[in-house]
Amino acid sequence: MVEAFVRLVCPECTKEWQENPAELPELRTNFSCSNCHATRRLTEFMRTERDLEAVRQFQ
Image 1 (spheres, rainbow, N blue to C red):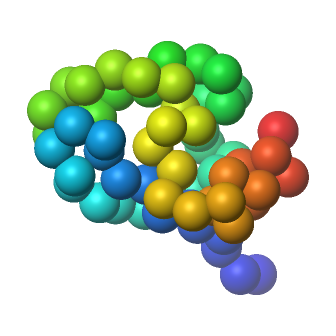
Image 2 (image 1 turned 180 degrees about the vertical axis):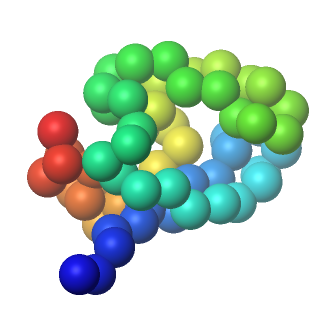
């Protein structure tokens, strides 16, 4: 089985990381960067439209 992942980037500190889309909260939920603790809607952390679409498929 292939694991899916999405690429995230913090709009504040520009930290980049990957997450399993099935483990992420709803797109309109507030999400915090583990590095600088900036809190924004999860959609603002999506690196690309493709990542956003991948998360939508799992919700």
